[in-house]
Image 1: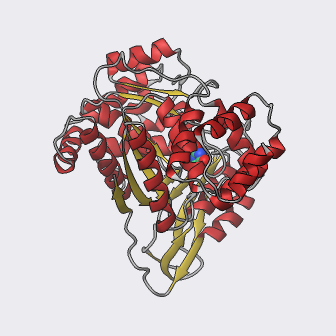
Image 2: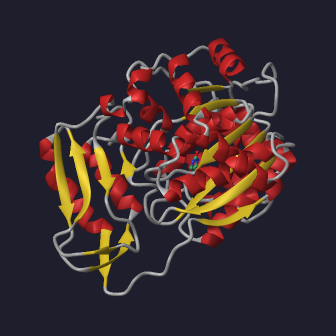
Length: 432
Ligand code: URA
């Protein structure tokens, strides 16, 4: 192992056999964590080329269970978001795309840190269950064209172990390691094609467009080496997506969007990503026609009907979907106000995400309980003019004592300027 660390430290390429022996030794714990840590740091500084990155992805993917979706007819297209604040796109896209005829067999994650997770959001619907056997999961996709479940412990165990080590050795932020971590999980879930929503900005892993482009290219390359089509859409995460952050609040906004009256940014993003999913799933000829099809499904109510069917199939109370006021709420609320006149020039997604965790909407540790009714409703977004004393947002929590700290975090998120900020585009670039 020392020789292999030296080799990578000197910037040389590792062979398939060498990478295999490292990953095998790591999984079996024959190679101690301190040597893997040094190896990760060598990768962090010297990088890996596209061949090494694809080999690492393949090794990680094969470290656990591989989901076989071949029983399900049609091209299975998965969507992955690199994580954002207020990102409820899966709640909208899954039923929307399923209604268009693309089978949705989705394994999602829970929220951790400042970003939320699809499973937690769905569980804010009374009775909704994300725990199902593999057979049930496949059966639901076959009969409803849609199922969303959690990833079991056997899925890519090498990534779980490696990520935990990266997290404590300051080696998370390396493009090859991020790309292989994300792609190994997506590929193990059995998708034929993948659309990646690659976030860039304050609330995201990638802080600059250049870094996001590099990551997109590496992920597309991994897909090509494994015969899977990958489209990466680079989108801005400088402010939260939509107007709500927090589980039940986000379900309500997803329902509005499926009914055709959601916020513009969220609707646009869902149509953009969904359009690529329909083309990859070969149910639309091109992106333009795909978007028209999606708009029709929203207008006709078929997308919302599919959402209700999906909720019911997984044990959820459809009454809560028809009457969203029945979803979990919060006992306490606080209005957060501006103390100056001007244009809202910054609405830092990271700080807003951290505020929502403070209010109870997210997990401070892996095992924290979630308050489904907690969160934030934004009343203003970047570029809006606000007056002194005008309400900027409403905070919701079932723990009144959380407001003091939450307001301190909100103060960090907002910047008001005399000049109107330049309009920021949401969809920055599409790469394939
Ligand atoms: N998300 C992942 O799954 N892995 C990373 O390394 C970074 C983000």
